[in-house]
Each structure stands twice: as C-alpha cells, then as structure tokens.
Length: 362
Ligand code: ATP
Ligand code: MG
Image 1 (cartoon, protein in one colour):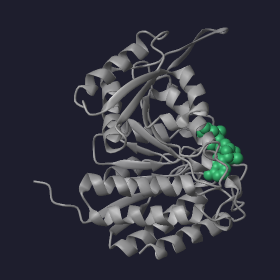
Image 2 (image 1 turned 135 degrees about the horizontal axis):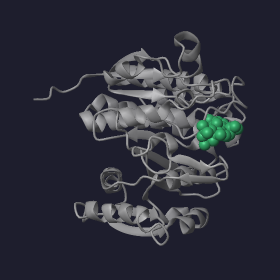
Image 3 (image 1 turned 45 degrees about the vertical axis):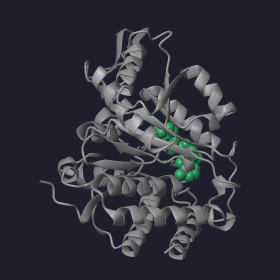
Image 4 (image 1 turned 90 degrees about the vertical axis):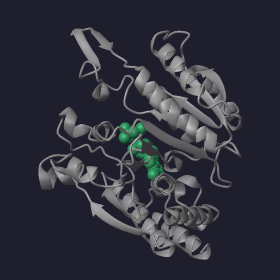
C-alpha cells in the first residue's frame, strides 16, 4: 500500500560554468513557487563536476549516486569543463546518472514565444529522445565502449538498439502524445539502417497497439531535418533514437531562440526524474550574468509538473502553474529577457521578472 507523498526530496547538482548561475536561479524560483503553493521540499546539495574534483577528488564522487537514489528527483546543471583530467569517467558523469536510474527518455519540448527572435510562430512540439542506447560510446551496453580502432587508419563505431530500450522510450512518447494532440511522429532511417532503425520502428508499432487513440506517422531523419525548418507547426510529439534526437533537439532549439530556450526532463519507469537542460556549460558566457536561465528553470518546472502527476500532489502542480505564469510574464518583456533572446536585461533581471510574474498569478 503506497502512502501518498506530501513532501519531496530534491537534489541540486549545479554542474559547471553557467550551471553555477542557472541552477541556483532555478532553485530560487522553485523555492518561491513552493512557498506560495504550500509544497514541502527538502533540498539536498550533491557534489558533482569541477568543484567535486577539488573537494572530493572526482567529478562523480563516491556517495553521490547513493545520495541521489534516496531522493525523489534532481536538478542537474550542465557538466563539462576544460580543466577536467583526460579520463573518460571524469569527463562525462551525466550518462552514469541516466543509466543508474534508468532514465531512458529525454523529453525535450520546443515552444515559440513572440518577440524573442523565433524563426517560426506557433511552434509547440516535444521531441522524446532515447537516452541510453545508440552510438554513444559511454553508453554501449554490449561492448563497453562503442568505438574501436582495429588499425591506426580504421575506426568502427557500434550502435546498440534493443527491443526493450526502443519499447520503453516509445511507451513514454505515446503517453506524452496522448496527453497532448494525440499525434506521434517516428523519426528514423530504416531505409538504410534496416536492422537498427528497423528494430526501433517495429518496437514503436508494437507499443502503438496499446494507444489506438494516438495517430502515428513516420518521417525519415534527413527529411525531418528539412521539415523542422520549413513546417515545424505540423509536428506535435516526436520519438527517435539517441543521436538523431541529440541533433534534432539542437535544431529545434535553433528555431525558437537558441540553446537557452531548450529545456529537458529525463524520465524512466521508476519514480525518479531529472531536470536537465539541453545546453552545455557554455564557458564563453560563464560568470557574466547573461546566461539565459529559461532552459534550466523550465526543466525544473517540468520536474515538478511530472512529480505532481506521478505522485498526484496538487501542490506540485500548483508550483508548475505559478512557474509557467512567471516565465510567460518575463518572456513577454524585453527588460526581463537576456540578450540571446532579444532582451535588454541580465539573468538577474529575468529571474526577478519571473518572481514578479509568479506573485501576480497567485
Ligand atoms: P555540450 O557538448 O555539453 O553539449 P556544447 O559544445 O554543445 O556543449 P553549449 O555549452 O551547449 O556547447 O553551448 C554552445 C553555445 O551556445 C555557448 O557557447 C553559448 O554561447 C550558447 N549558449 C548555451 N547555453 C546558453 C544559455 N543558457 N544562454 C545563452 N547562451 C547559451
Ligand atoms: Mg551540445
């Protein structure tokens, strides 16, 4: 018998560079939303990244995974720093998190807002990217590493696609499609990758049997790259494999103002979810107070929205509503927008704009 959750334990992993700005900004806004909604949250600081290397001797210290396993969810800032030692496990801690907590679906929405320099109006879609398979060398379950150099002038890259992995991400995507406009687009290239993409597509159609109310269509990935630029409004929910999803979500971000506008939520079948924006640590703008906090704040809002639905906590849903109202208000005014989205403000101006917008929506 499950007891109903009345409070949440949320981890804060700042990451590197602009992570030290956009993650605290997100936590500040979430705390204000929680206070206004009567949501009890215990916040837990968890070491990761460059700072953890200094304090604990590793970018992913012993104990971090255990700490996270006891939490309901976490907010992960961008990780990656030019001063990392050149060993793979130090360079890439976040795939470890996605694997350990089986966060196989990366949910990345793209929404246009007026006045911020979007290439198209009325864009509202979600790309669901498979998170733990594909070409990614650090995620290759079969061979350990996905890249090999049998001789000095030949490299072989291995891509892993499984029925289980494909079915899991497909199910997550169908559920999202069902909660939206009930339209799901499968993106692949089974014309060439007959086995890998073929298995992915077949797995999606198998899952589709459980979702007769969702309309399914297919677009080949290269055509998709073109159509995203020409008619992004014709898409609602999209599901695709890891690397195609990586590329298409950056392209989608470019349609609506750039990487600062690209949030994400990593989910699995369990009850842990992780807010993680699409962008990296952006060292070129770190410390200048101009990084766009939208992507991280919206990822955080998605986390609480998901928690609200998953655990049936009304206060978490109210947090999400308030945060959305605050974000919409700030994005509507150039004075409370960062320069990358045609604003005249700083990151602090944007955060204050969101806080005022939330106050007005109470
Ligand atoms: P990764 O390998 O981690 O994906 P990347 O090389 O793709 O990183 P990012 O750090 O994502 O690079 O960013 C690329 C550029 O986009 C940055 O250098 C920065 O100029 C811009 N950018 C990224 N995130 C933001 C943001 N939140 N606000 C404003 N500009 C951003
Ligand atoms: Mg990138």
